[in-house]
Image (cartoon, rainbow, N blue to C red; front, side, top):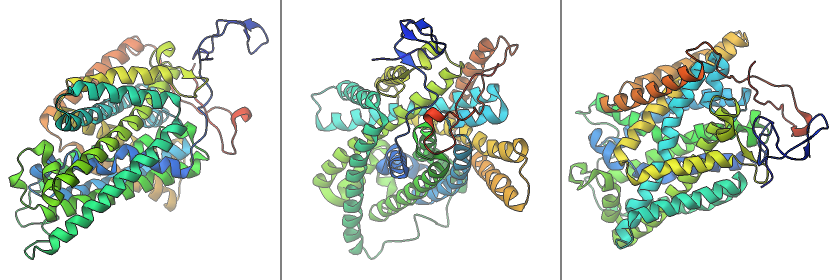
Length: 485
């Protein structure tokens, strides 16, 4: 591959910027990644990351935690996420950088806060592919018991790595096919369930949303766990530098992904509860969704579900790996992480190859991690990042840009503030174990930050707007990252 070093230092006989001869290295850090994605591709990317069938991943766990009110928990989570998705859209339009919440917090609050937000965001992004690979291994091992689960996990990691290296455009095409088959299954599942429900006159259509003995604290705890289902809109924001007209397309894609996926989650959860209302009869919370599907459609529908669910998990693994590799790339490009490891992008493929390989290696943790631990850690990291994105909107537009007037106060003050309150509300509903592990992770990040800044005596590299670069202009205002001096 023809590539050059992230800091612009070359090492072979290619001409330098001043006309001198220098040497070529393998990697180059372009001012931005190649813009190849439109609104449809962004929406498909977000939906693939969320996985339309992800409702079945924590179906049994959250159903038991909420005493049979999973659809109600999804309603609470969706309302919260819509406010936060709006904030993501505002920041992504104003700051079309690859670093997502890390980029927004760095610009609004400085490098130290930005680093800690990025560190918290890494927690959920690194655990999402692990969950996907773990689910693939669990389900495939059930149907092929003679093949070790580790074979399925390692094979999936290798396949996702190859597709991510080859480019985001190919990834978008694969996502389209995988989303399509998931939608087909959902239609079949709902149709078969409706037929089954029609023969049960005693079905309570309101029970999944409300019952007199409803535990609202447990409902909030379940809603907090479901935040992992909505990480797709954050994933969309990491593709800012690969999007045509990001100012227009990113906010639209983020809101569309959030609303469509949320309504789909509620619908599937609602139908599942109607067709199998006795949640106390679950034999195993982790595999409760399979029990529900077998109850509805027997072994044939169950086999169909397993095949589609594994495909959806693979799509999620690919897109989550693409997202976290770009966050690491943005942090490496700024010098927050070592440039020569993290700040590298392939000139041939236009993708951050080194960080993509690194994420694949980390994903091997799926061989030993538990599904419950990974799920709770994702929610902790996500809600932490979501809180700071809401705060970033207020700081960036009302303080830094000085926008005033009733409309500006509503769009950049009231709406993100409501999103912040709702997010913190869910965040406080997480379990004590989640806080123990999550705060330990943040403590490790703080120690690294102290090392990076020599005890805060040196400034942390930050994000700034850069002058327009006509060589990369695609009709939108182009911004790039550079290290502060």
